[in-house]
Amino acid sequence: MDKNNLPVIKVNTKEDIIFETYDCFSNQITDEKDSFDKLNWDHINPATGPIFIVGAEPGDTLEVTIKKIEIKGNVTLFTGPDSGVMGDELTENTIRQLPIINGQIKFDNNIDIPLNKMIGVIGTAPSGDPVSCGTPDSHGGNMDCKEITEGTTLYLPVNVKGALFALGDCHAAMGDGEVSVCGAEVPCEVTVNISVLKNKDWPLPFLIHNDKIMTVSSKETVDEACISATKNMVKFVQKYTDLTLGDSIHLLSLVGNLKICQVVDPNKTVRMELPLSYLKNWN
Amino acid sequence: MDKNNLPVIKVNTKEDIIFETYDCFSNQITDEKDSFDKLNWDHINPATGPIFIVGAEPGDTLEVTIKKIEIKGNVTLFTGPDSGVMGDELTENTIRQLPIINGQIKFDNNIDIPLNKMIGVIGTAPSGDPVSCGTPDSHGGNMDCKEITEGTTLYLPVNVKGALFALGDCHAAMGDGEVSVCGAEVPCEVTVNISVLKNKDWPLPFLIHNDKIMTVSSKETVDEACISATKNMVKFVQKYTDLTLGDSIHLLSLVGNLKICQVVDPNKTVRMELPLSYLKNWN
Image (cartoon, rainbow over the protein chains, first blue to last red):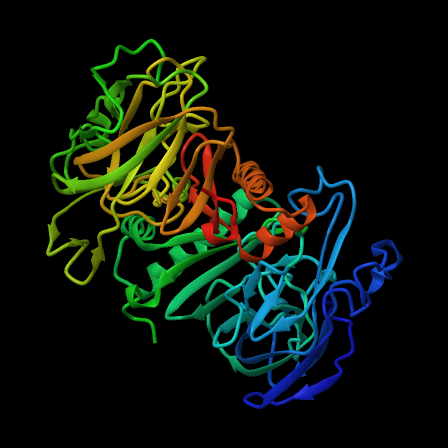
């Protein structure tokens, strides 16, 4: 994600846009015997784009409605030494390629896994140095948040003219944590619809899904991400209720849920979830 | 939690036991004007007990079934400078006392909060140095895990003869994170039933609730607790499936959920949740 990347297309707001995405290995793995070491690492975790959003200016907020995620291939899994939470104990790579049959991932003869589609990488170009598509940060990026899915509205910062928005790294399923280092990696077609909002001072990124608002923070440690996601949600509570600062954090302690998105990327990602009904002045 | 504490009673296994618990302030706060500074801090976060479980020997596993949590008073909330996630921004203490009306906590005229009862402190005496009831660790203690509730079966280590089991610090509601530093603190009566299991080599503590198994780990940082809870769940997957180590972590990456219990105590607590149905040999 780089302000110097040339956009592949200019798009008006409020038009449906279909992104064709590779899986996180750029579809390089075609069977379970493929050696992971042969992969071209310059092509890992790609995002499709960027697209230039007409009218998006630095300081604006991008409102991205995710309308559809269509899976376009088999599932690939990878884990191995130095990858994920078990990376210090694994002595060999494990690559799996799995079919999706009747809406379930066929993990083995005994285990079927329900689909839980989501977008791993989604973001805008930062105003400063480029950020790898493997790293999540304040511009979005590799947040690996399973709540970024069909029906979600995601809010991202516009840091440069046209926003330079991109997405990729879709998963057919993933649990909170992404502990192996990947989800059920699949190529997809993703349909989104984008609006540009002016004069908002919301802490970004955040999203709305299933009548909950969720602040999303990516920091070097899970501990730091917990603090940041919570403090961002306190800002929403302060802005959209009449509660004091003390009562705002009381409310979050009782009905907010601090949740893990992923603990395996260069920054770790945490979200704070609050039912929107508690923000009585939310428009 | 101290191996040198004298038990208040000896109890046989498989008898219902009712614990009368104070709230986490030992019921010292009786109105919202009470100065927090006047509190006797030797009486903060008490647990009721310990009880001596007849037949429990070091190395055994305590199986604690939580049958009932009955709330016996109003809700007290506290936050302030140096407490919780907002402790660096708060300039004054905020104490709230709230009634429970028609099964909801009356937060203010506009906000009702549904009950979500749970036990904050529950554990056994460690074999080594005593551990404050404010600190969670491998013996249990102040895990502040909202899944420790009615219907839960919690598994704890027996470190000393009789286990010296105790519990307290019940909450009428709490979200994951416990970000203010407390839940909806209430005195309670808690009914449990305890069994002693011999010759188990399960990683402890863990619990079963709503057909999910959850490993619970408390470490100095959230990052470390994430690793520990995940690795403990990998042990269950290895023990109760035929999956390789690589496929065990793949499974957890797709259908396991790594979740935060609390981020405000001296150790931070994380749980890994997995539907029990994936452990095909679970008895």
